[in-house]
Length: 250
Image (tube, rainbow, N blue to C red; front, side, top):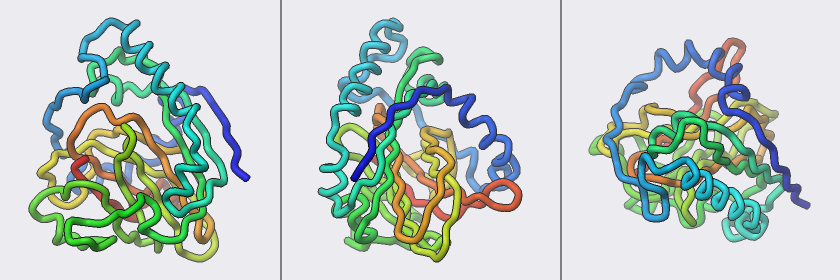
């Protein structure tokens, strides 16, 4: 049985506490200032600098499509059982400015809680160019791989990153014992980045808990092609610890 919830909040307000506790961890993360080359908006996304009414209409259409999506069927196609779905309205300044929209534009993100059969089910037929579901750090030495990707995490678990139906998704399947808390964050990074650095914050999921076998997924409308990096931030005694990442050119 799945549940659908819709909430409205400001990104700055709901993430303020997270930002405070993350300061120390992110300051020491290698590659946190990776540059992202400017890119054009994808077809269907308003041109940068378009009037506010144009952006508001686009954002409303995107939100309506998310609400109309059969997320239970979407989960089933990936070998998962949907447990909960939340569509959250937010004002994400970084996301807005990156695509040339007004800084105060209200957009949305989708959060899913699922039970999945395994790593490959998180993003359909996920794998690297050589067909493996996970990749070593040396595989990324020449820049980001193209298309959907999954990697094992310290957790233990599997983090995945992919695009489909005009959205970018990131999931983390927790395979450890007991339960842990934390959140998923997706960054924009350069397509030729080495490894999976952090960069400009593009999407942040809510602080959540994972129990053994739980998968949590967060997604947002994809407005530009390029490099993305998904990281699992696990709650620690002080702040958060980076528990693993995956990255791709999407």
